[in-house]
Image (spheres, one colour):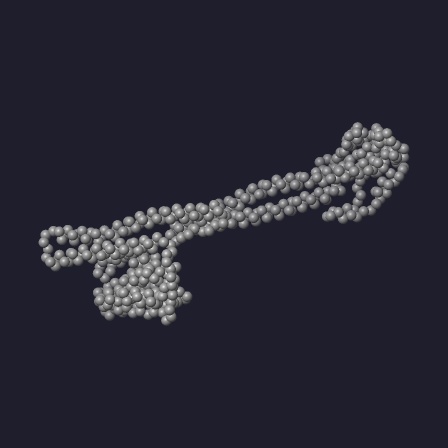
Length: 482
């Protein structure tokens, strides 16, 4: 299961369970609360009516006096009252009065006259000076058929209880109020759950988005393309990203050293073996002067190769050890190309190779390090000269001039070097920018395999890229794009 679904599910279970119990408590409390409110009002009503009825009860005129007439008039009244969301269209109180023995002496409905109510809770408790009330279901098991009975004592002039007045109200008359309250609570509860679900989705998305950024950073680091961890709003995840970056740098540092040592050791073996072999020969029996010079020259060539290898390893290590340029300034590409071409013209001319420079029509500036850019272009020119010499030695005469061009295309500055040598084998094209990967040169020797790696690193430090491809018509086309 995905992390986002786990977070959302866990959040929704917690919120859903909490909301379920809260809603259940609210709904369960609606009906008792409404009934308590009704009973409280009925207590006031019963005591008020008791004050009006007790004089007539003491005089024996309750059934024919003003009280009974007022109750009859009350039952005949028409009412239409809009009480918030509830429309009241009937008067629902019934009243009965018992004497001191619990016998019904007045009943607004006329059905209970003469009956003995002394055992009913409302009458019994009130006759004993206690609060008397009861709720009786007309239909067994149906709460909506319940009827409230709230009683108040009737007293004579000496304060003696001479009877009980009970106010009667069916629960069914307030059932619509209770049902509406329950529906409202449930509706708002469902809205609350929906809002909680939406918040849960947003929280889940927010957290998983942050985690996804970390995952992407880790995957990029695994491919070697990540430089800095993402900035995250969650402090703990941001700290995790920084820790991953530190761990990555430490691991890469170790791997970097191991890879360099392995590659450097491999590359050093060949020239060292040549030097050792030549040294052994030179230390042996006397050699003809020509052979001695040849072996001495071999030692010198391999020593130069070792020196170049070490120098380039150090240069590449400095480049790969920094993510950005230490010193950046405006660099004029036309002037840089002129200097670099001038420094290589003598070596190229000695081999019969010409270098043609085509500067940009207008001054073209880039922000960067002039020394590094000149190093990169110099490496491309050195490769182009070697390729052209190789073509000459293979008998491909005449060999066209090496072309160096500075141009601006699609909003990007470019340094382009084109030679007319044998080109790059298709199998080697994907690997030409790898460290220590090289092809045989014109003299049969291999280069250090670091020149193009340095070019790629210089381009990357300048926010650009390096490309190498076989040119139409033969030769190699190298580009540095900024």
